Structures are given as structure tokens and as C-alpha cells.
Length: 316
Image (tube, rainbow, N blue to C red; front, side, top):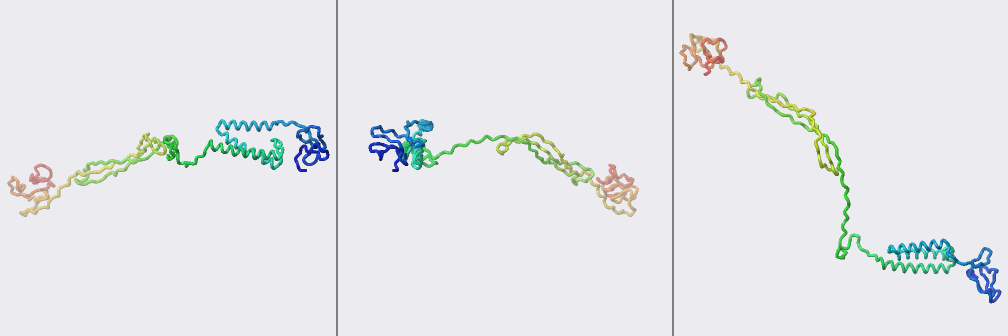
């Protein structure tokens, strides 16, 4: 006999019942006139004892947890999804009980009860899944589309504006060296003849150090303030000398004495004859001798030819 443990007709006493342990007949019998005892657990000695079924602490905790989850999901609008999840867990537990034969801690004492738990769990999965799909339909639509104000689905999703961090101003001091151009001037130089020009002092650029307070924002300069300007090297002024000296007149070649009396050595440029008196040719003098000009007085003006005393006679 391969039946599960329980009360069965006694094969040795017709009309009576005997306890079957699941593997062998037990020693306790019930006569036909005795009411049939309820199904009881078998202790270690094989003798069945009557026991009232009660919910244990584990059952109470599990039932409370399931109830709380269903209540919370109902408030959040996910009751059917949570019910489907509980049904899946129950089906898994029923499958484990079916394989093992029982899960007494959860009240599943035989494979028949395990099969019933599996069936109930699968039914709840189907019902909960269908109800959840009806309450929360899935709409497949491209992520790049968004419902337009008129209800159409052709409006493109506008990119969300990203917050740009406010740039921070950075203040630094910058130093730069710049050239200071030299100036030029001219001076009159009596040591040079008229028309002559010479650079007597060559001009040299100077140097100036400028310090600025520079403000940058996001890598770009937004403000610049002068802190200091210091001339570190003075420029040298260029000097150009311009000649003012008049050149000495060129002495004319001596003219031979026309009368052969010789020339007075006190004069040069022209031959001043040696005579009792000599006047400038073309002048108002009456001679008797004359000399063309100009005549340079190099000695004593014996004939008073240089009336203005500039050393040149007969130059008018």
C-alpha cells in the first residue's frame, strides 16, 4: 500500500479502521461503532495523536507582510502588479512543495495541496497580469516624439535647457616692457660750413615697464587697469648739427704789372703797381695807376684802397 498516512479500513477487522503511517499499519484501531478520529499527526513512536491546527508565528508574519504589500500597492496604483508578484511567489513555493512532497512550515502537507497552490498561483498570475495591462497600457512611441498641444504625436522633443554655471572673474597682474622712442633735434654748428649736416649724437630708444591689473572671465579678458608705468631706461635724443660757417673767398690769381714796375707786396689777388698813387679801376680816383678788384690787403694799405676796412679792396 502506497497511500499517504491516514485512517483506512482495517484489513484484519472488517467494519473497523486502522491507522496507516504511510509505510506500514500502525497499532491503533477504531471499531465500527467508534466515530472516526480526525486526521492526526504521527509522533515518533508511530501512534497517531489528535491535534488542532493553528496559525503559527511564521504564518501570521507572512500573511501580514502580504496584506501590507497589497495595501500599499493599492494606494500607489500598483495593486494588480503586486498581486501578480505574490501569485508568482506562491506558484514557486507550490512547485518546491510538489518536488519535496510537503512544506509543513507553510501548511502544505502533501503533493495534492502543493498542486492546488500552483494552480491558484498561476490563475492569479494570469488574472493580475491581464488586469495590470488593462489599467496601465504600454504605448510604444519613439523617444524623440512628444505629444503636441493638439493631441498629435508629431511634436519633437525639445531639448531641456542645461544650466550654465556662472563664470568666475579672475584678477591677475600683468607686466609688459615697451619701447620709448627717442626724439630728434637740430643745432647750428659754426664749426661746419654752410650746407654741411652731420649726426653728432645717435638716438637710442628707451624702455618703459607697464603693470596692469587684468580681469578675465571664462578665459577672455574683460577689463584692464593701469597700475604703474615706470621708465626703466631713458631714451637718448638724436642731435643733428647744421653748419653755419661761411667759407673764405678764394683769392684771385695775381695780375701781372702792366707797366712792368712790379707789384706792391702789401696786396694780393691783383697786381697793385708800385706808383705814387694807385686807385681802383672804374672808381673815382685819378691815378696815375689803377688796379682791378678785388684786392686783398695782406700788409699795409699804403694806397688806402680798403675804405671799409674788411681786408678786401676794390670789391665794390
